[in-house]
Image (cartoon, rainbow, N blue to C red; front, top):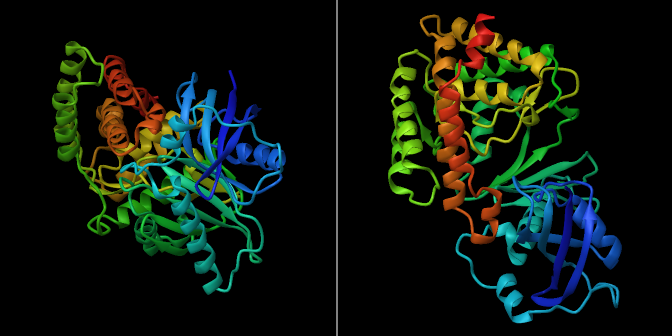
Length: 409
């Protein structure tokens, strides 16, 4: 299946018409670069995707037919748009004052964000030299590429339930400046980052994985007892309590009583995990190889929106799940060896075995935070995710630990 698109196009608050349906090559709903490109060619004017309005079909944030609200920055070519139908219904969709709507999902907020970025860069002597490239927009982030004479700069905006990335990056930069991007400017829920040469590390080889894991663990070990201000508390006992609250008080998870009971029993593992002796530190919490960038050297780590203070075992398990199979054993063994060298009295291998189902339960807590913090039209991105990962945790606990087998094997 692929993604098809329709767009309700506005300009300055006026509904101009509808474009589409048309197909785009990239299936992911949040990836709006191809949508912008198609619409700009069709309308003959620059546009920005404001937000997702509706999805028909597809799942997991991809495929199906997606309808967006798009703002034209200039009047489009005559006849380029079809007259809108159901105007009253969609006037409400495009307007209103949705309390949970992100600032970059409003036309005025989007313009303010881009104006702020341009002013900030101009004050640094790096004025924007061309059109802004909108790459991604959804409930978790707005991402834009801004050209300057000294190279591209990335603008990222994040929601109220995300960590302040500039603060987390600054903490890591104090112990290893080359591990993280360079922050050029920041404000509340927004950051300007220097471009990182190279590629995302989805296909990371064993050498890249070993270098990345050792470097990141060393930085985490150096940050023990140095919790950044305002960083979310997700220590073992806190996560256990948050999961119990989720299971006890959220009626619409769609879980059976047996599934809830099995998940509650797993929550007891957090106490045993704490006994493994790993220190609390800054946890990335989405440490997959797509959040690594490398041009052949040790990778730079990006995207700290989910960062928290807690047990670092979650990062190894997240990495393991997304790596190519050939690199997984390297990741596990390097991580175990690195933590053992930094904290000799700890038992990182046992922590991995205990935490494999707990990682999925931690994601359930986080996914519910997403759902609680977004407006209704964005819920298709995450609907069903808490229940899905809770079920995976129960299945995971019933089979031998894959990560532990890598250590043994």
